[in-house]
Each structure stands twice: as C-alpha cells, then as structure tokens.
Image (cartoon, rainbow, N blue to C red; front, side):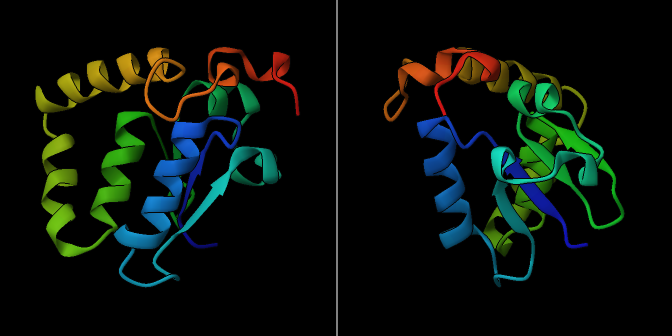
Length: 129
C-alpha cells in the first residue's frame, strides 16, 4: 500500500490544502496518495474517525502512522525537493514542538481562517454530510 496523507474532507481549508498538495507538492502522482478520511475504510489504515477528526494523518507505506504536525512534516519529506528540508526541520526537537503549537492553533481556528466553513468548527459526528 502506498503512503497516504489523510485529511478532513468536510473542512474547506483542509480540502484546499489537499488539492494544493496533490497538484503542486508531489513529484509524481504515485509518490503518495491524498484522501479525505470520509472516503476511506479507516480500519485498513489502523485509524479511527476520532483520530482523523482530530488531526491530519500520514500513513507510511510500512503502516507507520504520524499525526498532526508530524503528518505534515512527513508529507513535506515525500514532496518535491525544495520542500523536503522543511519537513526534516519540522521533525527536529524544539522546532517540532513549535510546529505542534502552530498546527493545533490552525486546527482549532480553521473555521475562522480564509476558506474555512462553519462545518470546520463542529466535531465530525455533528457535521451535515
């Protein structure tokens, strides 16, 4: 199974970023997949909807799971060359802590950011589908 970045398909910002990752960040379409968690059989990836609702997930080809800022760092590491060093930096102690603070702030405020929707502020089990 190829690596996959799993995002929240109900979130406008997440969907825009996923589209950007798919279009501009991957070197080749088969580098890794990008999919909304709502379209996947999460059990196949060892994930729950609660985990995917809480943060983006990166599932490596070997099944290793990274969440939140670590998922973003792993995505950058698998992307085009100019982005790979940023992913490596994000995994360094200290920088990873700061990346986590930023990731959690964006996650909590995504409904307020450009492209955000009211659905972004609701838990997945309360969103209209």
